[in-house]
Length: 297
Image 1: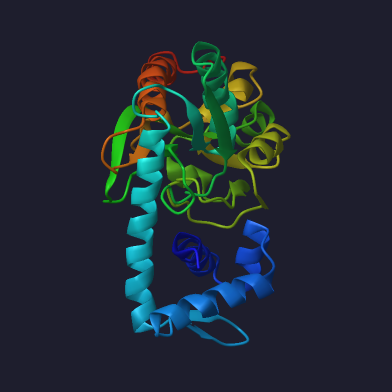
Image 2: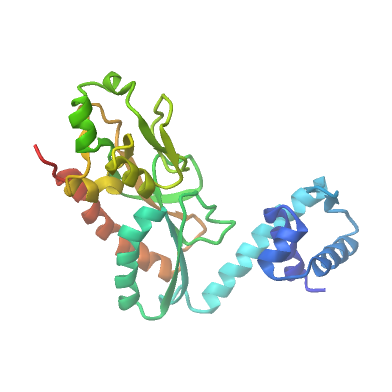
């Protein structure tokens, strides 16, 4: 029996919540997964999982074993990276995650330049507005916008981003310019259902959408006033399609960090990306503070 394989399969089943989900993710038949887990339990002489038709739960023995298995698998992965030379030469696959709009606009271009400079490194860019778990999903580096929870992660701050309230010139012509947040109480609103950071905004949405791009498009068309991170509306503001309102009442800017797991020595591929990306992002993000998008007077 391959114990490392069995540990990997068990951890995958626990992380995905079911045999079928783990099987789909790994490309392994459910029957094979079930058999290998049963063989592992037989070898240990202990039941690790309680299986019902609806879900899997870890036994007390299983909780301890999975925690130990994760540590062992991380140590093996670390040893393999060192043996493969990732600590002596910048090479290998680097996995980076970032919010969808920010990643496409600001992270992808610097990754293109990074690839040109480091031909032995390949990059997988995962664009998601969900905060992906760096350890469970084997992410090397994440771009995070917003306050960070206390964790064992290592964060490098690269800038901040304003949250702005915008409306189209046509809506402002019809309703007049607001002078205080209370003036917007009865204005129609376009909001985004997203895990991205956004201050609470009381009131009912005239239109709720799932992406910031859609919210900006709707606001440009005069559907309602919208509240977005500045980079999301920058083009529309520069084009005169949206106006920024109530700047004196904006919440504190959201911090932006590069984040990686604190697991001993960094592989050189990760260190090189951090050293490459951080100063470029800082320079680019300074433009949103010192040279905010202009708008007609």
